[in-house]
Image (cartoon, rainbow, N blue to C red):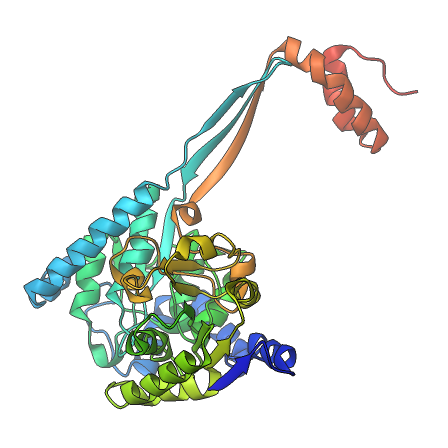
Length: 432
């Protein structure tokens, strides 16, 4: 963990190094992934079965598809209190995403043309869900429900099953989110199957969801064949807090990201150096209590930071440079500072709004831009599962009003047929 202060010499160099830290994996997996994708394209289901035996250490004798009977049995095995929590989260996520749905546009313009834009859902979407130890039912809800709200008719989910084990809560989440098909396939081979199709799995139009380096690289390689959400990197949070906060609360907010991954990054920005030191001490004490302490400790020591600023204007400027995935503002008037933040994936305002509430039950999506990409990207929403189609309708009067300008521009560009397609309708003279 490093400590920086805007009042000290060398701050700019230290902060620039913090912003530019390379936290993504440097292991080259592109060649291995390309081979897997080609193998799945060539051998289809047979390749999927072989990779399942190799990487998940078991051979599916009953087929790759997870049956409705398995879904029901899994759901029946889940603690009813957990199912209630899942239902609460699903209802809130669905309600927020329904509020995002856009309206079509129709404009009758003065020239006599009618212009419009129509929204329509994708036909099929693929959802990748990590399996084994990294099993996240909340991610199932966050990825599948916006697709369903958008109107996607076919939502396909692939989940690895190490040693043949299915996570019951993940399956319960899939059932509640309206997933159409579930397949016990993981890794780059799952991405290849959803992108190109096999004998059993029909291809989709877009693939979303988190995964390891192989999954991320596979998404990169199939982009263009299908759409993807993003190439997700390690998690990150910036917490802006003053000394009116409980250091233990802030420490746990920082560790909530650090426990995700050794490459995660947690940064505190405060205007009080003593408070920053108190939070750092609280982090050290809290690390002794966490089951994932080894992961969180490495994340905090390699990538964590306490940044002391002279005022909140500096905090806003530095936050915009960090463009964090998650932002917590724990100040008496968080909205005032938030108004000056241009770049953040999602913001959580006030001391009673820890980021973790957004991971599960608040309603907005927790699939967010990482690696400073909040400068130009947004979190997952219904818009990721919708397409826009513009349309134009024109009668003769409208074409007579705007057509001559189109002819002139087409002729200037040397595209004769373009111009003639309009000119012949208007009986305009051909170019000399």
